[in-house]
Amino acid sequence: MNVSATTQSPQQSGADTIAIGVFEDEGIAHDVASGALTALLERGEARRTFGHLAVAHAGGGRFIVAGLGARGAFDAERARCAAAAVLARARELGTATLCWEVPHDVSDEVARGLVEGTLLAAYRFTRFRSAQDDEDQAHGPAALVLSAHHDVGAAVGRAAALARAQNAARDLQNRPANDLTPTALADHARALAGTTGLEVEVLGRAEIEARGMGAFAAVFHGSDEEPALIVLRHAPQGARGPLLGMVGKAVTFDSGGLSIKTGAGMVDMKFDMSGGAAVIEAAALIARLGLPTRFVAVVGATDNVISARSTKPGDIVSAADGTTIEVNNTDAEGRLVLADCLLHARALGAERLIDLATLTGGVVTALGSVYAGAMSNDDAWFEAVRAAGEAAGEPVWRLPLHRRYADAIKGTYADIVNTGRDRKAHAIMGAEFLHRFAGDVPWTHVDIAGVASDNGLPYTGKGGAGWGVRLLAGLAAS
Image (cartoon, rainbow, N blue to C red; front, side, top):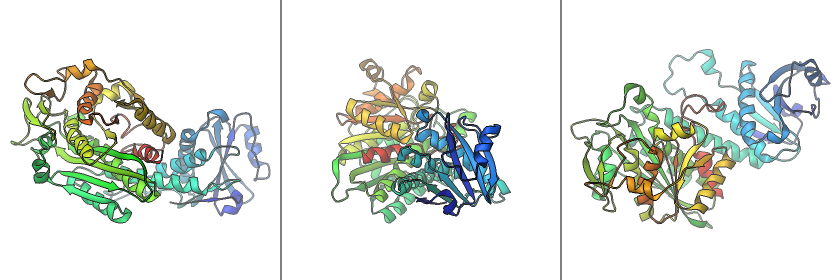
């Protein structure tokens, strides 16, 4: 979808459908339809209630009147939701070009939300559809125009870039494990590096093992697929601030290993690479936007499957720093991958660390699909992550770390165990495991298991949500 901004009136935009929002206790700012829109409100066909839509035809044009609710409650997130609702109606109407009249006296963040909500809601994954019906083919308008009294072009352009990167992460998430193998993900990262100027390095099985990354290796031992440690680096001229380390879990399919999942719990395990997808696409986006941020992105890609070579419950392995780990549950594999990835990011000089991972079902029980869970060893760094998430519409909620949680992962036969014997504080236990490998570097772990897919937002729908791309881009810009 082509996206642009204009200071011309909506009627001058060339759009065949114009969306106009109305707040509670307010009227239509400029009833460009010769009073027809005001009449719609007076008759009750259009309402100011948030989410309500009405359609009018007047003066040779077509209008969607969108209720926006209370002005004080209308923010970028509500704009995304309103945009998704309007897009659905515009699709039904066969819209070719949709123009949103940006409400008067709102921030540029609202304009950004309208763009993001539209582009994210317009997303469709059709890679494997051979016989699409009319609804699947109708991806919606070919163009979106935002009409505002002042120039919102910069906000609109940035929002379009963010949404497109998020949709690219969704493409990765939605690909099945027989298509998106670790090798395919590494090839995708190489291709992105070639178009964005990122420096890329990919280590395979032999190199990972040669570097002593026994925690990571414990996960891929059972697989015939070649694993990949994907590293993307960026050091633009004039860069400021500490070196940012972004770490992502990319388990392209998780059977649970010998601690096998139930059949019902396994069907969506292609989404276990969602953190890695967000990190890779955010890295490319940060470079495209020209943000003056130095970073190293480290993504551990493998599948976790069963063979005679699989790691067995009770096996003891060593991470790259020599820490010995008793693997008492092979379905707690993500933290094994991330342990060596965090160590590698530190070895490459990362001065701030953030990792994204679909790590635990426990965080879903605690927070559902509203917040990602976050745990951190540094208050100031967590606050930067929290603020970036809040601004991006990808909120995180902090859960505690504590010495008693750390004590609970101390091992009997090795330094530590990869999970406790019960599921108490399951999400925190996973974070405490990772905490050991973050060391003294300011670090925040973001458990995205509840928000990465099927998260219930009207603009992301079913499947991969690309959650984390906007947060990471915002963090890099802060």
